[in-house]
Image 1 (cartoon, rainbow, N blue to C red):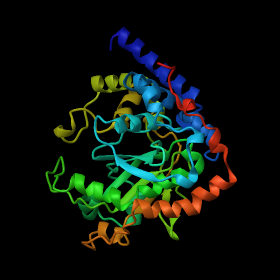
Image 2 (image 1 turned 180 degrees about the vertical axis):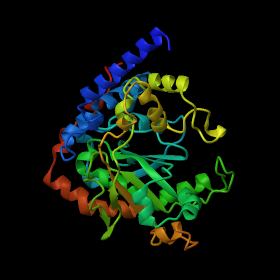
Image 3 (image 1 turned 90 degrees about the vertical axis):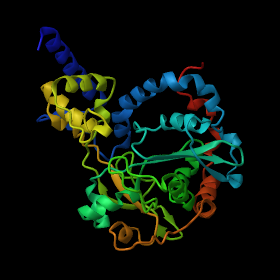
Image 4 (image 1 turned 180 degrees about the horizontal axis):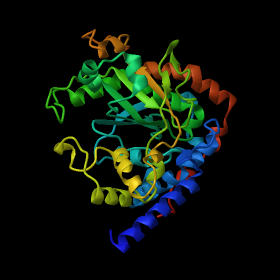
Length: 381
């Protein structure tokens, strides 16, 4: 390694360490110590640098559209809780809804993935005023997720055959002022609707797996997701007609890469690609590394840092939402037909309206003070 390369490596190491300290991490025996998981404000602060970087990275593609996108965001005086009526819209490529989906996800308190593999994205509008209520997106689940696999009771063969019938909610939430009316719960309910299952079936019926070439089973049996910050107030105790909709399965191990992607991930990738063997298992997925986590495991030791730094210690609660009475049995291969719950958007909203929306609006009218312009991310164009 030349002197210039050594100098560049030392500078990159220093940048990584400065970033971790700026985010609020402490070090103990080469491992990261996160803030108290019960302190959600500190957890939000931990993610703030990664969120800022994601917003800045999106500036070129979205900032010029911001004035128009803000016209889809309601001010409080434009919302009448008694007249709200949600409309579920599937996001199409190169549409206004796609821009709006991308814009809305930049406002989350943690950096949000764009999703992987198969994807279905939805926006929810209020038919009463045409404004955006919230968004959610479904993407391919990870192959190995212990709490999920134990809850289903999967063996290797059954998981290989039926993992295609599971999707992960990689983003979900309401936007203000609807979020102040507890509409995050509504968006979570709508993700389990029969309209979403039908959209999944329409998109993937007759398609084949990218690697194996085998026909896909276009039946959606289960949704999984993780909380944004520790224990979730959104999914816990969310019920429909007395039935829990999301079931808590435990917590993640607290690993990932959000804390190592703040403007220097491309440098870490270049370092790994120049010095390490690629690990992708199939050329059709590319010729580099299997995923970001694998790349970081290779790159960090090249900086004289432990690969254990991918364990940031910020645990997230894991949830499963069965979409049928027999989701687990179907996923284990014991049943060949799904007995779906079959609740539609209107059914779910009518329940939400009486259970949460109207009582919240009656006791708290702070949503009225929200101004759409406060949702702006960048200076006026």
